[in-house]
Amino acid sequence: MQDIIKQIVDMDRKAREATEAVHLERVNSEREVAEKRVAMRAEYLEQARKTIPQNVSEERKAAQEKWEIVEKKNIALSQQLDELYSRKGDEWVKTLVAKVIGE
Image 1 (cartoon, one colour):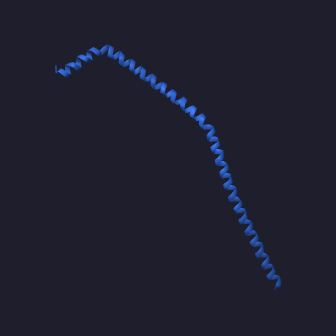
Image 2 (cartoon, rainbow, N blue to C red):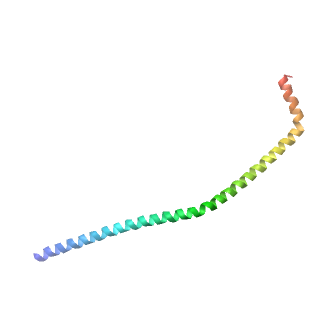
Image 3 (tube, rainbow, N blue to C red):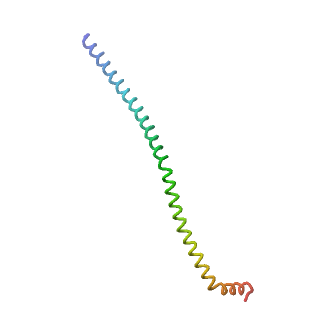
């Protein structure tokens, strides 16, 4: 009978030790995950800080290129309007005056 009680007590002790080991492993794993998360976030922020100036430069270059395209288009339209006005300006003025006067 004493042997059975001793075996039960030993089994209970081993089960508690195993449970404690699993608990410690879980706590350590959670701590490692938290540390890795902090490290990954720091690494991501560091990399982002390095790439931001490069991205700003690239964005400025792209914006400048777009602006130049729009500017060229506006200049071309302005020239077309000037040419059209030089050809038809007198006609337009006569038409407007006639409409205003009621002729």
